[in-house]
Length: 479
Ligand SMILES: NC(=O)NCCC[C@H](N)C(=O)O
Image 1: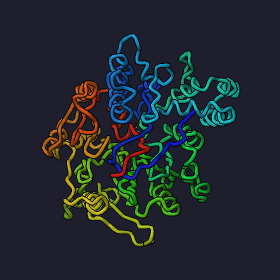
Image 2 (image 1 turned 30 degrees about the vertical axis):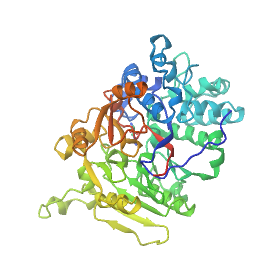
Image 3 (image 1 turned 120 degrees about the vertical axis):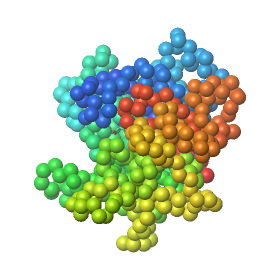
Image 4 (image 1 turned 90 degrees about the vertical axis):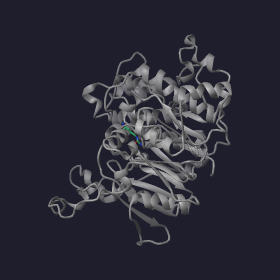
């Protein structure tokens, strides 16, 4: 059924993207109610038709021109025709694109569920975490795999009856795992709303034929034994790690954010696994303030080119405090908004290296890991002008996806950040114009350089994640 030459391999954040996992907004996003929006980690309720037709579909089109042009080039009019009812974008529709480069998770799940034994096990597991009745479990076990995949993700039966909560954050595929060279590090979510996603992904990675050759390369973070012995639900010592906190910056070097979502314990386990399995030689832990605004490392910076990064200034350089102010003697150091970068080397246990600030780390990656002859250029969120710096970071100005080195995808709403890109010599294009030019042949993915592609964002940004979050790269070219 599938191509046996399926390869995975990512060793930078910016090499030309060849394959990624995505999930298009499913009906579950249209079921988020105001009273649950925060619990389900959405900032607001979203309008399903708009988020799909007027926002996310453009992302799929763009990805197709770059990663799988044969599926789209010359066919755009037909794909967009009213009478085709977006079939190209709907996983269970006969006209669905079924790309093996822009890979829809719901379809991988359906493939895995076609196996009777896996369907039984996974249905039992989902029913256990969602507290379903045994009768419902039997009914689900006997449901057609494609329909069942949709139910597991949306939380609703085909007749629209809700049987459990949706998992609307599955659109943020970044967070479920990370490709590190030819290994996959699975997440261990901090938030309850993301637990079912993780379980579905575990079954996919361990059972889908695409990943058959890599089964021994899947790294799972265990809980330490003493975890079970602690009284109560002690959140302070939980071992958690979410993919948005992991960045594969160069062949031998991974960044791990310790954040609202990834704990020190989670980072510790990940480092141990990466070193024991000889996956990389260096891991740098970047500790950022644990707050909702920052959530994951990729919400405060991402890489654009080997010598260019976009970052929130207060993360790049921890705010300077007036040491005469009493407040600095009253607060615990960790409650101050400081950010630290600590590098661990596989061959130098117990001898971490400290960076003066995050910008120094980024410069070290650009020059020493990636061979940039000139120091790193830093583009700041909101052009580093108050209050646009934090406003635009909140709407993902720092959360860009590189389609290739220098060509990045971001939201159209972060005006000051866009100005900063322009000032740094980047072309700014609107995705609608770009898609038209890619279709007509006026522009080609190969010739595009130094460009920020602006995407419509009014609804997507309410879900609190950008295109870095909405992508799980599994194959990139070396740079
Ligand atoms: N890597 C990311 O920062 N992902 C964004 C996740 C947004 C989602 N609403 C969440 O809070 O988990």
